Image (cartoon, rainbow, N blue to C red; front, side, top):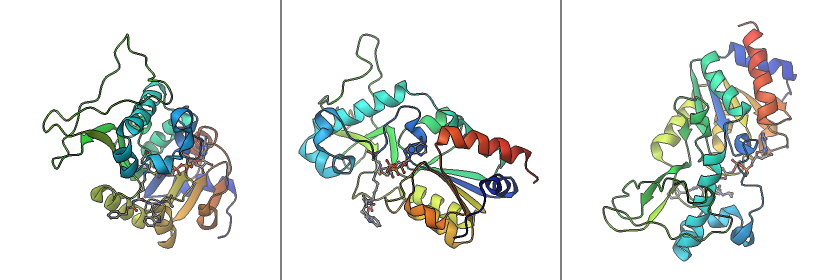
Amino acid sequence: MEQVPPTEAAALLAQARRVVVFTGAGISAESGVPTFRDDLTGLWARFDATQLATPEAFHADPDLVWGWYEWRRARVRRARPNPGHLATAAIESLCPDTVLVTQNVDDLHERAGSRSPVHLHGSLFAPRCIGAGAHPAALSEPVEDEPADPGEGARIPPPRCAHCGWLVRPGVVWFGEALPEAALTAAVEAAAGCDVLLTVGTSGVVYPAAEIPLIAARRGAAVIQVNPEPTPLDDVSAVNLRGTAAQVLPALVAAARSAPR
Ligand code: BV8
């Protein structure tokens, strides 16, 4: 794929009628939220995320897995959206027909002002019971005298469903589980119809989510990648902006605002 000079990225974005922004864990890294590539610590150090984020891990040791998600939820609650999240929300104003598709389970896009991100892998803030009813479960809100952070490696017994008594599980998509059909359909349709797909902070290795930028490229969209490291998406990207989300995205949006439309 011919590499277009970075200054062209702003022109591509300015002239786009339909935009998809596709984000991964990297966009939340500068908010202090660990990515999936980061090594796990504490009790979880002997695992990698792809082993813990599975139904088998939860079945084998619900306290260990629920503790990991409570620790992650506490990290996200303490985090703030970074300039990368804010610039992503600004793109939605620059180009009204923008669809934000995220693989992330945090709520930093929403807290940065993005209207309705498509969450392909669910949310840390939507636990549900494992019973047939998949009843939504209330989150344990942090109370003043409780430690804001349950501590790395905390084993925490998952709550029980108030409706049916089954265990409550995180409301995320684990490895080996199907993605929510409506979210995946919306993401595929947006990718198939966009002029520009901006992919930010993803290693592009987890499927079927990793298919989204490829669908856009196959349908002739210009893919712009923001990532400090090379990824499998380098080959389909018209522009590879080697840098971090918080550094690159605000500059890209500012340049797009002043570029001819
Ligand atoms: C499924 C939620 C089938 C949980 C996650 C082919 C087709 C279909 C499936 C497969 C397939 N091949 C293999 C599979 C199986 C599997 C898979 O893809 N495995 C991988 C490991 C090979 N896929 C699945 O299991 C999926 N389900 O296929 O079901 C099915 C169908 C019908 C019925 C039943 C079953 C489900 C996958 C979803 C798993 N859940 N998250 C949780 O969060 O706990 S995945 C999780 O990891 C993320 O959500 C994300 O999607 C993925 C990768 O993370 P990234 O976001 O890319 O982040 P990562 O850490 O990897 O990389 C960070 C990047 O950011 C790096 O590139 C780094 O350079 C960059 N970066 C760092 N700092 C910055 C930065 N960039 C910018 N700025 C910075 N500051």
